[in-house]
Amino acid sequence: MVPILFFGFNFSGQAVSDDIDDWSAFAGYLNGTISVIISTFTLVVTIIIAVEISKIDDRRNEKNQKFEKLKLLREFREQEYKDIRNNLQSIFPALMSDDPREVNLIIHQVVIKYRYFMTSTYHLFPFLEEQLFLDLKSTLEKFSEFLEKDQEFVDNNKMKLFEEYVDNFDKFNIRIQTFLLKN
Image: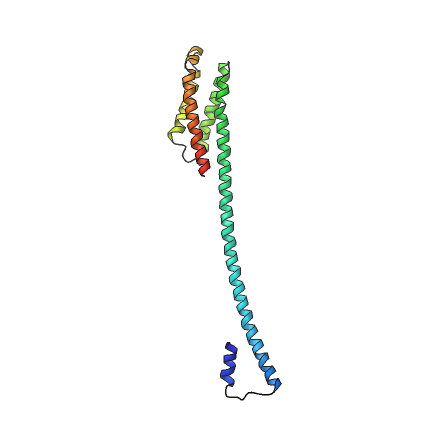
């Protein structure tokens, strides 16, 4: 449109030519000026499209990275929970053993693993300071102290402590499983 206005402004006082060569020159003029304008416009639009596609791709990559980090964090949490749950469950068969030294050894191992869980996985489970985790730790330590007593005392009081442990262990499982399902 601009080339036509420019041409009209400069040559408006001229008579319209009947010569085909004049019209050919006019077409060449229009073709040269309009194709430069269209090429420039196409280049600008292509650059704008490329920038927008790049922004979309960057946002998609950020979302993918965030998703992968969350997935990895969830896998870490699930693995740590699985490990500590299996360790805590090892107390059940250990208490059925007839050898008090074996029971005591297993209980001490579980206590140590639980202490490690409480200190090493804090970043995965930010709520480990809650009372139910401390109660479970306390019950585990009671087991350790308890098993150092004489066998008759252990036999007479084992069920009470075992019930306390089962209750705390169940609360522990429910709390962590609820957290894993929400996150």
